[in-house]
Image 1 (cartoon, rainbow, N blue to C red):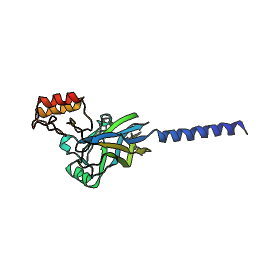
Image 2 (image 1 turned 90 degrees about the horizontal axis):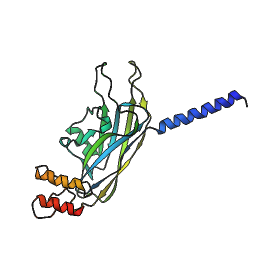
Image 3 (image 1 turned 135 degrees about the vertical axis):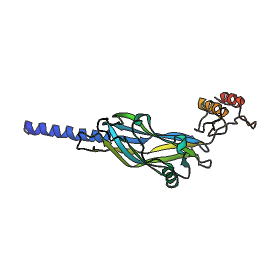
Image 4 (image 1 turned 30 degrees about the vertical axis):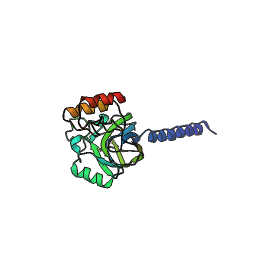
Length: 236
């Protein structure tokens, strides 16, 4: 075999490996989470990408019989920390109502910028980027166990290379996540499925007039006061 043919074979093999690796480097997924029946749960969508992303769309699929997205007034659907420069332009009460009826939340994210002098905000390339956060109320009759939250119709667009290009769609693998539902625990004032310092903060917030997800009357004396804070501290 000639040296040229050997070199060509090596280059082809390396190219195929690189192309395969490129596809494997782009993954979007729902991070596993916990919640309690009658409480709440926060779902985070994450992204690992080898290129900057300036626009995306996705469908978040969930069991609407067990989960309901909280009202937008509670900041229930927000861009993640690593996508804070992107807007969610189609986000209103009708969208949430439709999602809660169908079990499918349709999300579009992009930087709404028409000024060519202003650079586009992006999700920078890298691993474990938090791009979306969704807060749910867990039905009080939700069965203890695992619920699957899936992603569908995912599209990612990278940054345009010149003024004549809108960008190129990025190949990405979508992976589902698991929400583990537990029984409601005494002292779980935050309703996240566990008793910790956040429940103390939730009861202190209730004393200031902020409602809690779980019962704030931890000691069962018919009122919420500092003794409920002490009751939680004894459970920690």
